Image (cartoon, rainbow, N blue to C red; front, side):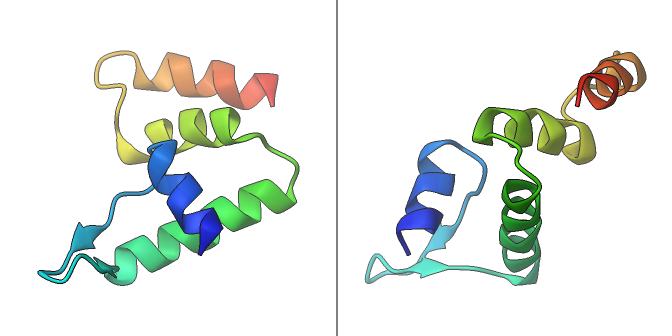
Length: 75
């Protein structure tokens, strides 16, 4: 559970909240947690994971191909 809080704090993950304040995770969030854990197991830092997820999430609109290729090469 601490890991999930950390993922939220570092903006790797966002969860919706129920009326009672509990987090609610849909299938996409669960898959994202699995992806984050896989990247951590590969030795990536949370900052590297954040950049990787930005590429897969389409964060870089105009420069996506170049930015993501450079990031991939650096890893």
